[in-house]
Length: 111
Image: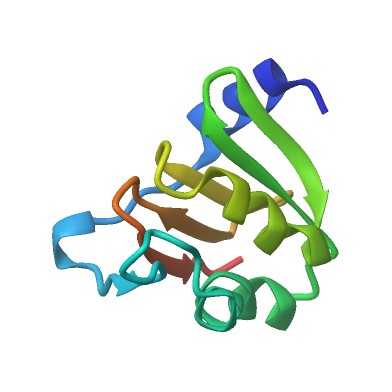
């Protein structure tokens, strides 16, 4: 999927919640590497529970794509610590966010 299209979709549909009040979890170790088992639980559980087979991921305005659920962790691993990462299902009711410092949160909206 074209990164510009992903950016446009994310800009218009990505639902944010009060980040200061959200529960954030650290996903990187002391070397800045992604702790994949923790990322699997935090980033993917809500998507899998809702039957998502693919998600949209945006790293920057010009870096974003659609990936299968099994490809999310490798994709995040390649970008963690470089930018904020936003993830959403195609229907935009399940969301995850990884901040540049490696902390993350996920949430879902009612359909």
